[in-house]
Length: 127
Image (cartoon, rainbow, N blue to C red; front, side, top):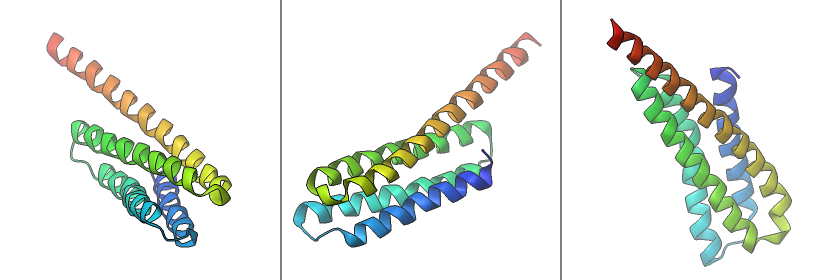
């Protein structure tokens, strides 16, 4: 997956979440969870974009780990909203699955970069 494709996918999750939230009925519980899921879903893409501008591998990993946390948080609040909005569970499930896929990509990316960093560090220490 390219950087551009992942930028699009994270943005699309935020848009899908926002469109879904606009349809949900207003209640104390919904409003609280909606606020959280809107922030975390938008933060996924914003932090991924920041990771793409990272100054070093360590910075890149750190920023991807923030994306990982925000993606997981988005999934959590979708789970909570689904419990109180049976009518919208199918829509939430689709967004959840996309977020889960993005999470897997991010986790794999973090592991790959960390492995490369470890390999580079061991090569440098042998020199």
